[in-house]
Image (cartoon, rainbow, N blue to C red; front, side, top):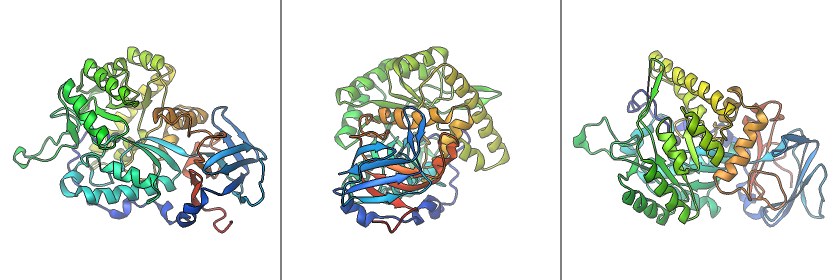
Length: 445
Ligand SMILES: [Zn+2]
């Protein structure tokens, strides 16, 4: 999570309805979804997005067999007995990927969740969040820390994978890792109250490796570390203290690599970003401030920046006071200026919203903002789908409509290459061949 500059400990009233996406009222086909994977389905729509090429086919068809894409084109084989779904004027495209989510956070509580809500309670909210994200078209996500709920995310991920609850396919980190007194430690409280940290402590290389091994044992699939914080932005000067040395991060990267996975860092600025890029992390999330040398390393090593603009916009729009809103806006403006420099320097981007502190199911806004702040829509879609799949180490499985890939397919109203807003108008969601949402032909069989 990217915390507000102004104190996050003012616990706003918790509005349960806020985590329920409007899309939950959409037609869902969960019961039939359980039996659909063995069947053969042809999806037909007015258009189909080729993400790699940045082009749209018209019309578009996809043959789905046993949960995988079998054929893609303007006209595919229609086997006898296949279910034909005409999705009208929509555009077929790969399911969206959010590379920075928090299923275990919801609006209005933030860090106070660890104080006032039990882990079992938070796990129920996380299950609802997973459903909201899926219904909004996000078929794969990277959860960047349970924020004090330990390895409870493994229960959510495993329940999704078992078909018990609807949700995206998940890469999960368990708790994030932080130093004592670091970004997500429970500072500013009465010390006598012993408020729990939102992260797991590690202050030495040995402790980092031990925590990573413990988390992998408990079910995590990658490593999330807090590399900077807390931030200040005063008189146009951004400053953030680093948390781990380059050597410590390199040890974490090596330990993750030993188990076939990678490290993503919360990292807003320098010199922490340079340490992270040199150590070879997979992503630098938030990335407000990157030096020329850091940007060069990120381009050379294909380390993704994950800007997370949506949460900054939300915090600015929901600040406690006009002064706090102005502060959020000023920092967002600074980030946007830096983003322009990062794009010019060829820093590879992935798309992550930091959803959780703002309502799950609304985070397609992140793609809209990345386009608004200077990326061509085709580049935003490549960042989301191609880079996102690689960051989640599923690049041979999701993110493209290609034969052999998993049938993670959505249909949106409009052409996202012409107007990226189309990704906020999801009308159909399929994951692994199962249909979870169909606003176009709900009764078609
Ligand atoms: Zn986050």
